[in-house]
Length: 311
Image 1: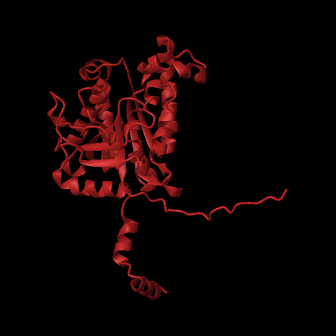
Image 2 (image 1 turned 90 degrees about the vertical axis):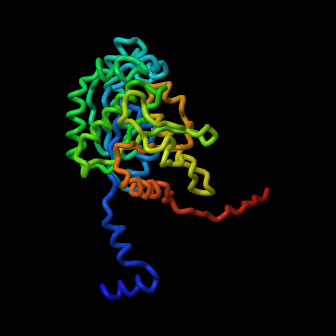
């Protein structure tokens, strides 16, 4: 029987060794390091593709509970039956609510596990030093992040690109993630990538490094890798991956400002930090090439015949 199967595969032109390699290739493992629940929305489609289409592992390391988001909870007050825009009430209730919102979003994306670090989300700031020097217990966060990285042997770490105009918490999370990867033994380091979204009509996004933090240097000032949310599929190509992005954002109901980004962002873009080994660029290119595949077969249906009714 085994000889017959090999003969049949040879006849139809399939490479037996290639098939064997494909079936035994390990699934990708990724860790997302973010400051707040809902930050993962920046790369929601990439995470979906890893977990749902590549059958990989996606875990989330969330540093704060996002309780400073009470100012944007107006519409959620009626939904949850809580006066979330009153600061003491919002800060008391949003940690529980936002964790639940994130796990609901994670069901859509296929998230495997969450690591909630419960650090203080003080207030909006562009200054990364506020969380790093004041709000967060940085030694505790770094120790826990090192434990998670060491125990799980990830292939990739995703974080938000620490651009000048982004939240100080986002910058701080990126800096901690890069430093944590850098401190691992070279042979055990995952590839760490910084992400942002853009529309196809936007000017080219550029980033080199965030001032004062040389570890944030990227090897190019433009994104090396992209995932196209507008890639179309299904009957007559009527669907695209923005459906997934919108489903995911919709779960973060307490954050009205986040919800305003529905359907925005055609690209999920990724920069390759210089702390990564350059020899892994090809590996990462191959990884994103796999992610770019739309695995849903085209389907057609017979045209409905008109029904004539006699009166």
